Length: 272
Ligand SMILES: Nc1ncnc2c1ncn2[C@@H]1O[C@H](COP(=O)(O)OP(=O)(O)OP(=O)(O)O)[C@@H](O)[C@H]1O
Ligand SMILES: [Mg+2]
Image (tube, rainbow, N blue to C red):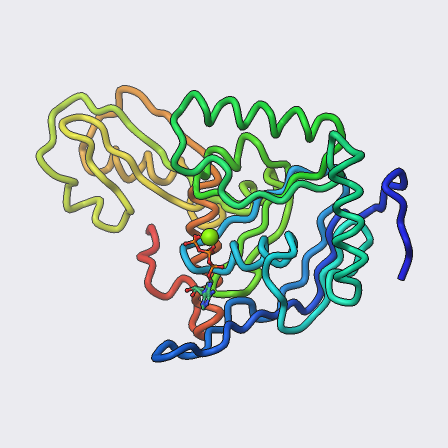
């Protein structure tokens, strides 16, 4: 194993391969496979966010990186140090690091801003941002998607112990081609007209109609045509692209479907 000094910067701050964690059965609770083979590389200097639904395995993964949870199988390396093969060297090095370094090379945080008030949350975000700007690699989990979207430059999503996606935040959002088109109408409606039943349309009473669609399947122009053909003159139009929220939900749903061996879009009504 390479003995990396704290001054040397490895290319990857965290390297994980085939990582598995099974919590042993305890009393009536059966054994739980919390991580089912995770491969993940986090570049040095990254501001990395780990997202996933409740019980996905986020805290387990973070706990392994922090040396608080013992892995069952696989490799996990933090700053060039293999967590499994060298646990007592690691601890001493961490103590040295604690004593000598103001800015740690890697900071691992599990939901650092959960359950704190708005002001403290802002302070924490500023502090973590400052550390990252000075070179610390940040690895954190959060349930606040807007927080991940604004803070993190890379995001991984896990679901049911498996990696569902890992990319730059921008790429992750761009991967999803969901859009919403909203039209302002010249008259009040009580419901979405039957003629538009083929669209994924919702009425914001009384005069705004929002249609969700995917750019790979439907053109905005075709939606406008359908609305006009339904006899509804359009006063104004606006469109909105996907955000991390949309991307997250889609990727988690696809991950779940892949886990169950079913096609991800089977249950989704498609726009005409
Ligand atoms: N000490 C433990 N013993 C047994 N099972 C555990 C233990 N810790 C976690 N689990 C189980 O492992 C799975 C993953 O849990 P984990 O806490 O890693 O999820 P999480 O993604 O952090 O969820 P949350 O978003 O709710 O914090 C869950 O099914 C959980 O119940
Ligand atoms: Mg957790």
